[in-house]
Structures are given as C-alpha cells and as structure tokens.
Length: 302
Image 1: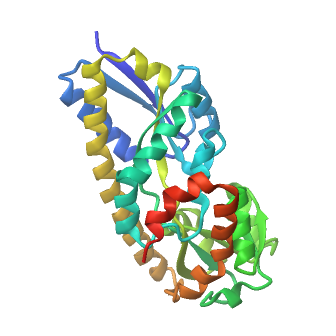
Image 2 (image 1 turned 120 degrees about the vertical axis):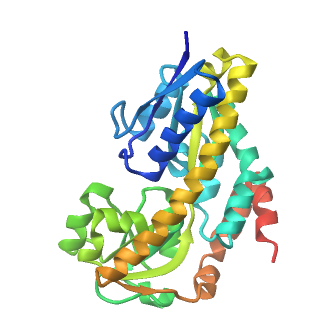
C-alpha cells in the first residue's frame, strides 16, 4: 500500500505554489514507483496558514507552504526575513536561501515540531499609490500605507516616513476606495489578482521587502518515513522548487505586462535613498538580536 502525504495550504489552485505542489505530487509518484502519493488540499480546505502549521505540529497534516512572516509566529528566527532590503537582488536572494543562510534557518523549526524543507519564491514587495507615484522616500511622507501586521513591516514603513496601517488583505480594496489608506505594498501578481490597480494606478518598484514562502513538514510525520521515503520526498521537492521559481518569474513578468495594459504607471525608483532610510532598523536589530544579526553579515558585504 502506498504511503500517502497530505498537503494543505490556503492559496488557490491556480497559484504558482499549488502548481509546484502538483508537480511535486507527480514527481513523488514517479520517483517512488507508486510507493508514495501526495494528496493536495488547496484553497484553505483544511484551514488558514496558521491552522495548517498547528496541524503539522500535532502530526495530523504532513506538509504545508506558508509565508515566512506567518512562520515567525512559530519559529522566532524567521523574523529575520522582515528586514527591509535584506537581499540585493533576486539572484542573491535565491543563492542565499539555497545556501548556508537559508538552510540554517530551516533547521530552527525542529524544537517546535516543524521541519523546514525548502523555499518557494514570492518575489519582492513594492509600493502602489492612489494619487501620485513614489519616486523617493519623501513621496511617502504623511501617506497612510496598508502593511502586514508584523512589527518589522510597521517599523519599515515608519522609517520611510509614512503612517503604517495594518488592514486585512480582504478589506484592502474597500479601504483604498474609501480613503482609509492612500497606498499599500505587495508583489506584482498580487496587485493584478486583487485588482487594486483600479484605485491605485501608480506602482513603484522599490522592492523594499522579499519574504519567501517556506515548505514545511511535520516533524512527527517525517519521523514515520523510512530513509528511502525521505530521499524520495527530498528529491521530488528539489525538482518542485526549481519549477516554482520558473513559474514565479513568469507570473511576475506577465503581471507587469498586464498592469501596463490596465494603464498603471510603473516607476523604477533609485533604491539608494530607500536603503539609507531604513539603516537604523539594522542598527537596532544588531543591538537586540546579535546572534541573528551575525547570520546576515555576509549578505551585507559590498
């Protein structure tokens, strides 16, 4: 009888992450010669990000994919990804995640019964605004900007001169429409799918934040697998990560083309002033999290 893995997450079936997990399921069946299979439950069928992680902790679910920002609530070390401009560009980001920096962080989940397996790309977050483009940090002065609820996201927006306003993703369209906020930030595919460009037609690719998604396995479930089964899972996942990176790059490219078609003005501001404005956050981080800061020092070399 085949060993069955149950995988759940809240994103819809057409999202690159789910497509990559479907690829993983096929690869796993192929690698194992049908001795293992993966059942997928996308679209929040088994609960939110947080609920999926809780199911992993008790061994009732085998695998999930969540933002590192959500994982921070379970594994404190993942707060490192909230730092703005942590990576210089996509190439450095993907290399760091697959290298010692990223792999070391994945191991931090074991005391919390969570085994980090790999990273899916989720691009960079940039500002989009209702009334005028953001070319410099000064253009953010006084604007009410919707942010994720994480402390670092709030401090980043504040350091850039704006007023951070945590609002849930589902309520953001109306909040922009009614003037509760003047701006928000996210990656290009999210801006397209949420249609926020209908109200906020200026998109400035300042790319201040790059928080990856993390493929996480239940430590209890992993312990039940044989060495051979673990090898099949790891190999299949390696192939799925490469596929997800391709899918994400295409989704970003297609989204920028679609935004231009919809009449969105896309700016590529000089990032130097933005990077300069957030340096105090790094000084604070060095003082309060010296061990974690040591991990990012190699990334900050010129």
